[in-house]
Length: 149
Image (cartoon, rainbow, N blue to C red; front, side, top):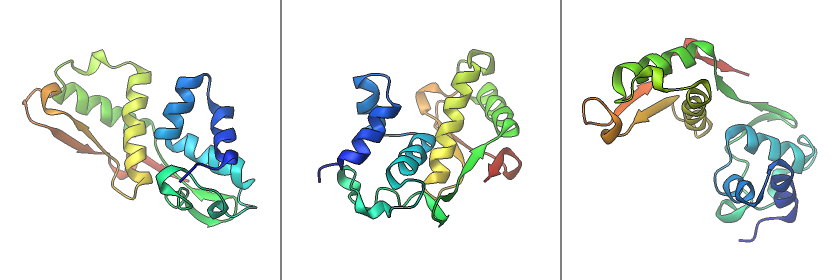
């Protein structure tokens, strides 16, 4: 299915260059997905199913839990969650906790947010070849580490 021009225009408005367009189209962050929804639907005034996005078709916005038009429910990892991630990485990642910058920790938090966006617990995973134990290691951020909006 061809992506609606309105969605492509919204993606282009968020992108800095052609690579960004490709990356956002293929795997938008939770915030980018919500922003695209806001732009395309005019904050819920237009039904999202009037537009299509790649293989998701007209169900591209179904993973954004909408209570009422323009009012989305989103969960984000807060500072407590970032501390939990850093402690988990320090104990389980070959590179240790000091290796990870704030922006890298934010990327790990975004992974957990993507999991929540898909209806799963806020979980992150260290791949086997990056873990101290040599086995994949998973961590679920506590309720205290997540803000629900």
